[in-house]
Amino acid sequence: MSLNGNLEHLPIVDVIQLIHGTRKSGILRIVGRKGESQLVFKEGYLVGASHLNNSLRIGDLLVERGVLTQDVLDRAVEEQSQAGRERRPLIVTLLEKGVVEAKEAYGALQALIEKTIVDILTWKKGTFELKDSLEMAPDDYRFYPESLSQEINVDTQGILMDALRLFDEKRRDGALAVESEEEAAELSADDLGLADLDQLERKIPGVFTSLDDRGSAGPSSPPPPKPGGAGSRGAQGGVEPSPLESRFEGAAAALSSCKTPPELSVVVMSYVAEVFARSLTLVVRGEELIADKGIGILAPKGEGATRPLGFRISLAPPSLLREAVQTGELFCGACDLVVKGHLFSQLGTPSSSKILLLPVRSFGQTVFVIFADFAGRAEMPVPVELLQKLSNQASAALEKLLYRK
Image (cartoon, rainbow, N blue to C red; front, side):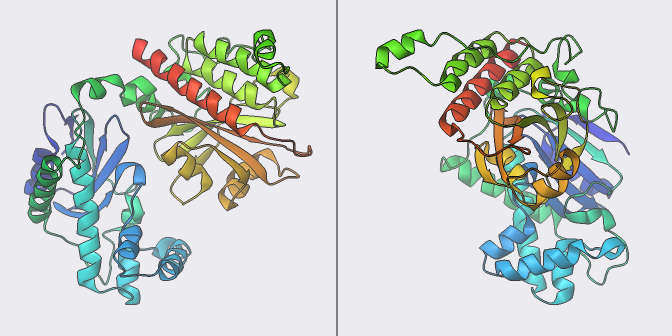
């Protein structure tokens, strides 16, 4: 059975009951303004969930409840990751190792599913699709239901009733913000081009293409921002602004004149390249980042933004990249193993481990992240406040751009 539609026409509660009643297996993928959540079914029973953008995991809840220590969880995750084709869902791994009781494990799983459903209940708009395959299930439920010594089945109707009760209580107590009609109408996956990106598979002529009304991220990209008028600022304070402060005015002016998201990303990336030896736009696409255009990577910096690189980085493992996408906060400091393994392997290892991650968001969603490092050059002071200010202005410009669209 193919099941897909819109939450405006068929509420999530009805969708869950339909899948349960027809005893279907697969992943129910729900996409809304805030991002994506997933519910995993086996023969109509809920066996797993991916809370909004995978922001909450079963292991986190077990640690939070005092069932596991972080050290025990880390060892289980490491063992799970090295199991290859014998890999089990984390909850099964923990049960088979005997480090958690079945009652505690199922309690945490039920809490994760309930939290996911409660969050979806706040969405006024969104789309859903049931995929028969478990290949893309969260927490490696794609290996389920192979022969396991532990069965995972929880009471679907019971979870649904508890989720509805929690939703009503939280809404009554003012602890839950229900999405307004205006918010729901402001931004969708189609507006951001995420729906189109899902169809790109491995062919990436420019991952921003679906966001560009003119269909090309290349010719529309502006040149790096030129220095703006800094004389008045110097006159007011009696101190001449630094070259970077002067160029900031030019970058801010360029942002306001951008007509497409690709143009906007190049403006931000070009300003970052004033400080760092190389910079790269990483576009957020579901649970991964796609490497778009770069400066100082395929050609000297003076040639500006070059063609998209096209490699992908998973946001599933904990990393600085995932934190930047989820929080929208600037990071400037030493890189982690994910950056070393996925970015440096593609770009080459720099002489300094210091990196920049500069997220640009729209309506609470990170749309792209600018990555930068010093390559083979010596480090120089990083104007964090100016970069944060530029990120804020770029986010505001992107929201206006998408609102007009």
